[in-house]
Image (cartoon, rainbow, N blue to C red; front, side, top):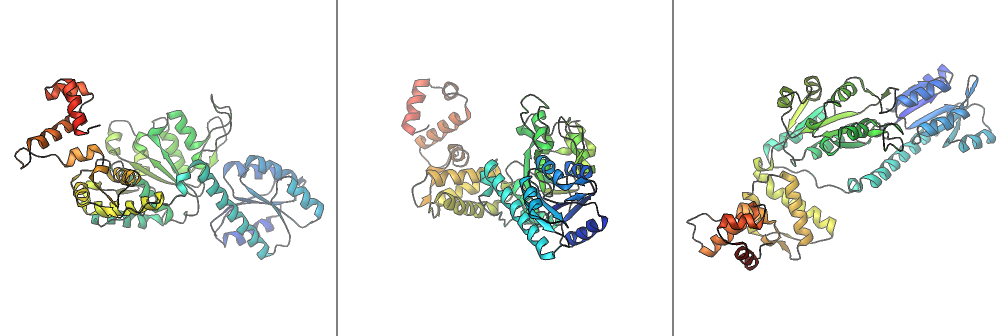
Length: 446
């Protein structure tokens, strides 16, 4: 059973102690409240999966607390507990938002049943949320394979730190697989059954980035039509992956530093302080030390993030991986697109080995997916590769045993690819634009 965050609301200290011991023995995280007011405070500070609420809270009624908790935390499974059971109170508890009803003294098997139902509900809601907001998340990804010693060490280090709570900083060029490594760390960690969320700093303005990270209250700024819990709250108990952390605005950096140090934050438009249990993994394709020296990144935040640094080599630095990765991606996209492409021509494999892959694994992935979708033959041949890849890897050198026509064709292709317009290309080639247009048509250059 996955670890649950549970709130016990009971005015009897012995009941709280007994329930806490039972639940913690099953590796659940437990917080307690002895009154209506303290229960609402706890629910405001943390995200709970389950609340066990006593019907009688001294002079207060747990039945009044149920709708208040349901309103503030609609995702929470609320179960009423009481020694004064009756059909009327059970029905009333359900009407006010409770999902179940158990009696004292507690039957361990009955409590186990409630925990299992809560875990199933949490998993269902998590998958439903993924399907609504990130439909691609539910589709399996090709596994990360490598024959390269440096990359194998990277994967081994990721597996080693996964079992810890250490903050990890992933360093590597764009497209080298930093998100895949972050997922490996999450999937191998004790947090694997909790959410994995991603925020990319360059994709949002500073205002929207802070809202996406920490959330906002309804009406806190123009366009804030409803409450947004934020990614920190959404991945309670799980892992938050901060991609391209070097692009994080200076205005947000002290707030992230505070959250890392104290696990506390405030939503935009709110004064109340919230807490969250979230593991941070960050990634950058730049030099954070240089950014610190230039005043673009806080030094104290850099050292907080750089507890364990994992470096990812570029695809060009791991040539032995190119063909195995291509074959792996081919199988993946065959299955996704219901195709049966058997492999690559020798010429294509030769180009793959020569090409510098500036976009790394992401570029290789795009090339294979495009070829599978557009191709109709049994294998991927050279005509299915992007023009830029062909011009980079197949240029003939002067003096090679080829015809003048072949040299002219490749020269024209390269000039057109590197020029901003046909007019500029014609000027470089020393011919008029009409002649270039005619040659381009003859050569089949798009």
